[in-house]
Length: 198
Ligand SMILES: Nc1ncnc2c1ncn2[C@@H]1O[C@H](COP(=O)(O)OP(=O)(O)OP(=O)(O)O)[C@@H](O)[C@H]1O
Ligand SMILES: Nc1ccn([C@@H]2O[C@H](COP(=O)(O)O)[C@@H](O)[C@H]2O)c(=O)n1
Image 1 (cartoon, rainbow, N blue to C red):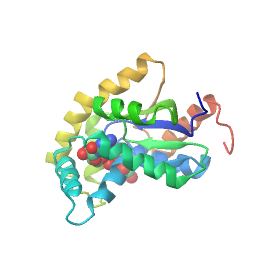
Image 2: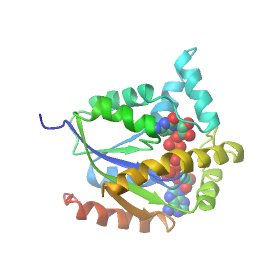
Image 3: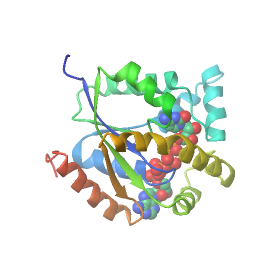
Image 4: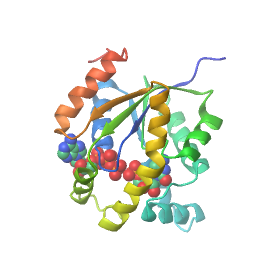
C-alpha cells in the first residue's frame, strides 16, 4: 500500500470539554493543522439557500449528527487545501458509527490515524463552560446542550470505546486549567514520538 498522505489524530470528548482550546495550543506548538468538524459544518451552513445548509442547521440545533458524506468531504477538502503538514488534529470526529464507517470508506487509504486524544471531563463542568463560552453559538443553550450530551453518551462514547479496544486512546482529564491540560497533552505527544518543538 502507498504511504498514507495524512497523519491524523482524532480529538474527542464531551461538548465543551476543551477540544478546540487544546487543539489551538497543539497547533501553535507542534504545527499540526487543527480541523474542527463542527467549525467546517458551521461554515458550510452559511451558504445561502442551500439545502445542505438547512440540513446542517437542523442537526446542529438538535445536537444530532450530520451524514458523514457531507462532513468527511469537508474534512478531506480542508486537508487537501492545507497541503503539507506534520499532522492533522481532527476535532469532533468521528462522532458516531456512520462517521466512523464513512471515514473508513473514504479516508482509510489516504490517512493514518495515530491515536485518539480523549479529553474527559464531567458533563456538568462541560455544560457550564459552553453556557459561558460567549461565542453566540445557536446550540450553546440548555436545551440543545442536553441533546448534545445525549448524542455524546449514546453515539460518541461507543466510538471512543471502539478505539480503546484497539489500544489507540490516550485519555487526558480536561477538568484542570487549560494550561495544566495542555501540559498533560504535551506529554502524550512526546510519548507518541512527536518531539519536534516540544
Ligand atoms: N481547561 C479549561 N478550564 C476552563 N475553561 C476551559 C478549559 N478549556 C476550555 N475552556 C473554556 O470552555 C469553553 C469550551 O471550550 P472549547 O470551545 O475548547 O470546547 P470544545 O470541546 O471544543 O466544545 P464543542 O465540542 O462544544 O465545540 C470555552 O469558553 C473555553 O474557553
Ligand atoms: N462530526 C460531527 C461534528 C459536529 N457535528 C454537528 O455540529 C455540532 C457542533 O459540533 P461541535 O464539535 O462544534 O460542538 C454538533 O452538535 C453536531 O450537530 C456533526 O454533525 N458531526
